[in-house]
Amino acid sequence: MRHPPPPPTRSLATLTAVLAALACGDATGVDPDELAGTWRATTAIATNPADSSQSDDILALGLSVTFIIEASGRIETRFELQDIVSSDTGTLTVTDGEFAIFIDGQRSTGTISRRDDTLTMDIITGVEWDFGPDGLDEPATLFLVMRRDAQSSNP
Image 1: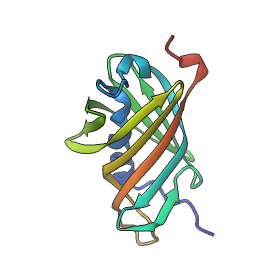
Image 2 (image 1 turned 90 degrees about the vertical axis):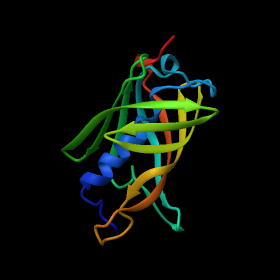
Image 3 (image 1 turned 135 degrees about the vertical axis):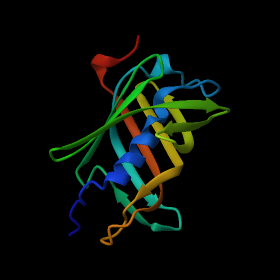
C-alpha cells in the first residue's frame, strides 16, 4: 500500500502556482467576477506525460486543495496535508481559451472551463510531482475538478 508522501516544498509551490490559474478570464467566459468564492477540489489527478501509466489521485493521498478567489482576480491557494498548510497568491491571464499563471516567476499553462458551480482545469505545463519513492519531482500534468462552496457563490 502506498502511503501519502510528505508534502514536498517544491511540489506544493508548483501546485500553488498552477492552481492560481482560476483568477482571471476573458474569451472563455471564465471571468474573475464569475469565479469569486471558495472552491474545493473534488478531483485532482497528477499524471506523468512521459508515462501515462504513472498517475496519482492527490486527494486519495490525503492532500486537500482550496482556493479563495476574489472578483478582482486575486487568488489565495491552500494545500493541506494532515497538519501542514501551504498557501500562496498569484495572477492569471486568459486568452483564446488558454490560461497562463504567474507566481514567483513561474509560469504554468492549460485550459479552464466552468459550468455553474463546477470548475474544470487541465494544466499541461509548469507542474511537477513525485511519482515514486525517490523523492524527485518530475514534470506532470494536473487535472482538477473543483466545486464552489454554496455560501460563497456569486449571484
